[in-house]
Length: 149
Length: 149
DNA sequence: TTTCTAAATGTTATGATATAACACACAAAA
DNA sequence: TTTTGTGTGTTATATCATAACATTTAGAAA
Ligand SMILES: [Zn+2]
Ligand SMILES: [Zn+2]
Ligand SMILES: [Zn+2]
Ligand SMILES: [Zn+2]
Image 1 (spheres, rainbow over the protein chains, first blue to last red):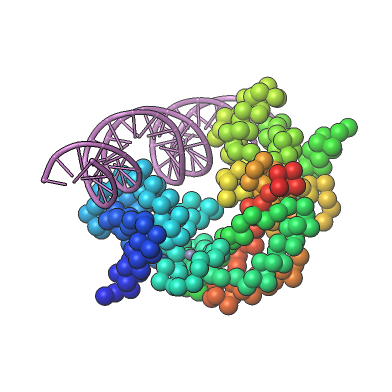
Image 2 (tube, each protein chain N blue to C red; image 1 turned 180 degrees about the vertical axis):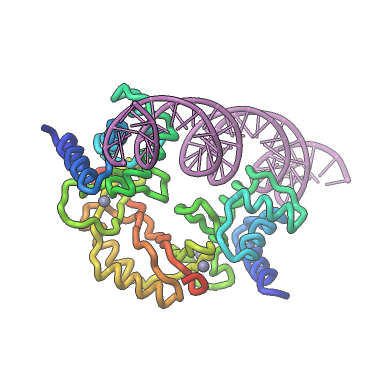
């Protein structure tokens, strides 16, 4: 059983644990993201499912499926690029925290990291000092990955 | 002479200082952003120029003008919302640094802040530890402003 | 099993954001 | 005045996303 199959099994487990259903189509979309290892647009996922899995899913459905997967914390949306990535912690036991992303500007690879809480706290302080309240410290940082530096 | 007119004069000065031209149309777009005080989309700026300034500028031109204004550091693009804001430091003398933004999720107001360099350095360290290289530390944070908390 | 219901998916239309390609206008330089 | 480059207009099209309504399907209730 390869990693992706294992991860999909974990994802299914996680959904079932609170009565949500990871259907075949939802699995197809999630596996597309897991396989590519990078961020893909909804329409790129339509293409992937058609070309690689021989599964036709209209764009509208892909958007709905992505919304479901986001809710389940199996997928995250990158707002800066309007693309979607599989969560890196699907197989982890710990509760999911607010994620931070390093996005390679050159090749599109994305790494989901946990930034030290102390740094986030300092950031929060900075924001409060400016008279605002930080709602979601999801950072999406423009980077270069090791291969592309 | 009100604040916006002053700021526009500063902007014109700044352009002239290196041979760039702040044309009437470019001024119209910039003044739209300055007047609104919040982030606007390109198409919202088309509407603003038509309705408030009686100046018809096609969307294509607004995009080109925004690209010009960004290059001049007079405007910044918020990637998370695909909107544009006037720079808060147009009238400042200091060189422009990479900006950070607090975006109110509720009312759309945007505050451009300078986050402490030490914090950004720590962030950079975190990113390097993850094997990536931070290219642009422009942060765009989802917040609530004082009015909306 | 059959019927009912809610969830999931399909279909069609449309809106919103953005860029490409080429034409035209106009101001500064030669 | 002619030339040249910059700015702007026009049209077409790509890309991202949602609304509204129809149909299918899975699971619960009868
Ligand atoms: Zn995650
Ligand atoms: Zn890369
Ligand atoms: Zn600025
Ligand atoms: Zn607000």
